[in-house]
Image (cartoon, one colour):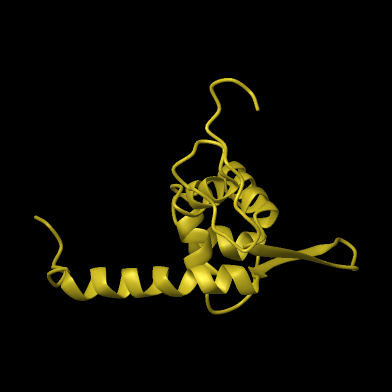
Length: 126
């Protein structure tokens, strides 16, 4: 074990200790709760989207950040990337079973937040 690292592997059938800095589960939590990770999971909750559809569904995200976010969510096993054998290749993204499991509490969180917020004033400011 390297000096200064706080790593302790889970026992077989046990849970990871997410309070240790090298815990793999901690990385997944960081990716899900990152500025854009949560929006990608929410955007993919109903159906698969192509890259540009996904970018348009998340206002304010750059192509670079969407690419980086998708890359880590695919590596974490939350998002699947499918490439259709066409010219040019069509790439779509969707949630894996693990991604759907994590997406459900996020949906509940967003539903609770939006129910509790006061109604938006849609009149233009003068």
